Image 1 (tube, helix red, strand yellow):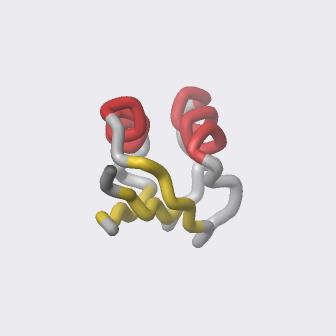
Image 2 (cartoon, rainbow, N blue to C red):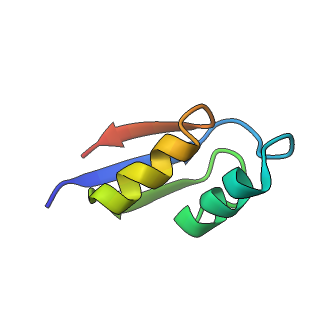
Length: 59
């Protein structure tokens, strides 16, 4: 399966509680942190919730 590289580029401080919990669930706890996740519909949905805070690259 395809992999996604997700990087947190903006802070979640001013975000809603739902956005903060989504970032933590993806493993994005600090700015500029990068995680690699499998490309699934669940992960894509989580990215859509915080798409203005992250950069996504397909590997």
